[in-house]
Image (cartoon, rainbow, N blue to C red; front, top):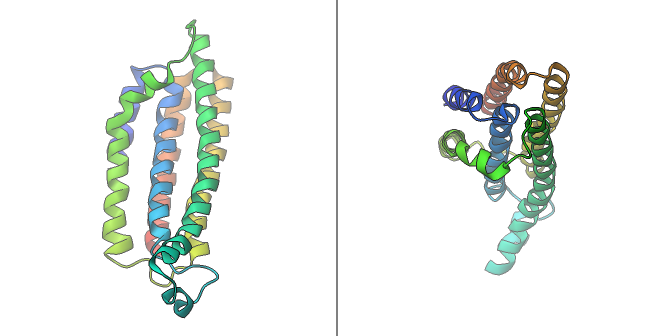
Length: 200
């Protein structure tokens, strides 16, 4: 599924400029999906500073509030990072469209065409969530701190890849070449992250 959605995005990109944003956006969208699922995963883990007996003594409303502290903190921090990266994508798209002699970059119109590959990516991660995290009970023995850090490691790599891809695209001046160079790295990074998660 990872391979299929990236091939679909690559084909779509070559016919829908700015092509420099296409696969980068798919990688960004996959990181958003991972972050959303991680919020759900955090609800399955014990809280940091509360024992089982203390938690059991709370009322249902306070239990929900206590469970929501960790996921809420993660959501705020992670959302800020992916928002910053999205801003970088928009700037890259505007840079390419200006080079093509266009007046501007229709962000919503361009990215709306990626619903199918993004849906493929999301489906793959949702299936993995039910099959591995819940079905194989990967949450057992996993700490809140460890689960919180997992998507952040990915988004840091995304920052580095984004800067590198932007540099190549701007330096070469041919977005298609930058896109083709970026695809294998993105596939390797995605597959490596998946297998590392399963191995842990």
